[in-house]
Image 1 (cartoon, rainbow, N blue to C red):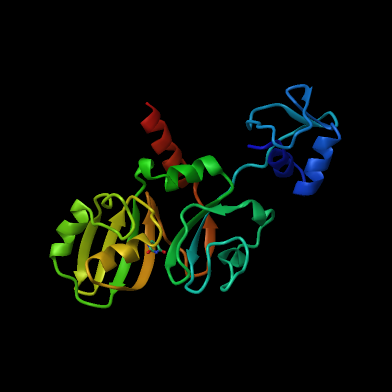
Image 2: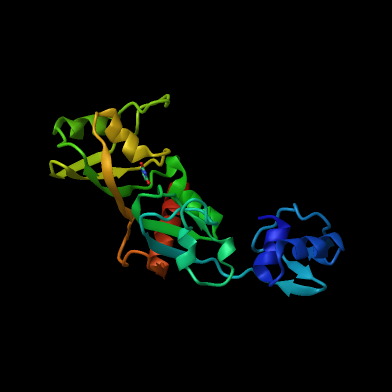
Length: 236
Ligand code: URA
């Protein structure tokens, strides 16, 4: 991560204050004075501020049940940010691993660990996301095969990756996908002439939503590691 971010994550300094102490030559990395805030450092580098060793705060991992009419952004826009319901220190350091539309509800994973969220959002990691979908019209059973084979979304060069569609009732289905294209679920149903009227994310990887709308909790160690394991297994 950048040196100014490291200084922020290990002190109470703001980004501007961190840049100032770096520019003034008060920060050393592995014994060498660094005056550029852009210097890249690793968590296990020895970083000091005026001779005092800095240690990054531990990373945080949360899940939240997003309410409809909130947005996956760090600031309020047309709708309020979902971060308003997370009252913890250094909230501005958190980001969302896989955004939902304003009208979509359900599971959102939140962290300040960019390497962890990379495992969730990057398509090559094939992390599964499970959605409960309400439709405007009854669905034909042929959709199961179409989604398994991949469908053509408007403006995309390639078919969607194999997806699992389970029909619960003709207008209520469950869809598992491993990609996260813009408005992907809504566009997949549009491609077969249907329309999503309600969308709710139930699961990401092994992590199941288990809190009430608008509530959040920290992930367990096991839940956090479920995404690191994926990383390690692929590296083996
Ligand atoms: N697909 C969509 O179309 N919308 C979402 O919010 C998530 C997945």
